[in-house]
Amino acid sequence: MYVANNSERLISEYQNIVGDTLYEVNIYTGNFNSIGDFDTASLGIFYPPNEIIITNEEKFKAYELSDLSNYERNNLISANNFVKGTIFHELTHYYFMQVIREMQMHEQYVSPEYNNFSIVPRLNYDIGARFIEEGICEYMSIKSQQFIFNKKYYVPKTTDEIFLKDKRQKVFYEYSVAYVRPFINYYGVKKAIQLFVSTKPPTPEQILHPGSFYKQFSFVQGDF
Image (tube, rainbow, N blue to C red; front, side, top):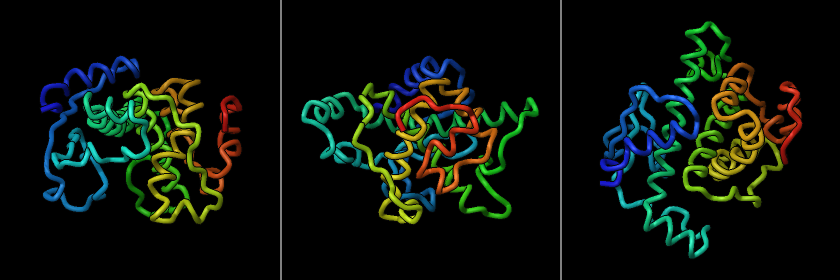
């Protein structure tokens, strides 16, 4: 019911934050078991070209509540902010693709790793593209809930950790936010996406050392 009653309002709120228009995006709930291959921990799925599906399973109230204070826990449950955060995360996957399409329509260069597929997989760069995209999506999820970004985030110590399954959640949904946040805060969401996708994604070594990636943009501000 929250999704049915609030999807249009949340799309409007999202558009106000990014200062741009979302085109033809649909949000509804469903059972992921009918979709096929999916991450069982997922609360939402962006299903190209323009569908966002939010799980109708009883997951939200139990999802990572142990990481929150009592006040934040009660606020999330009462306000359905887990659902809102998930919708904003998935809307950002859609918006990410929309920005890429706009750039291609104007014949602006987009690094092929960000086109959601590679004819010849290049693991080092493809994982960097996913890292950047998920970081932006989770940035918008946290921003939608008006939380303060966590200063005690996980930081991988070796490139091997980036590829470990048991570290995936912390690398792609925690460290990635800290990685992209200063850049987004400086340029804004849309401009940051345009800059990110116009060059090759970070390699695993550059994921460990943000400064080595951001120096190509002459960007040195922010706490890395």
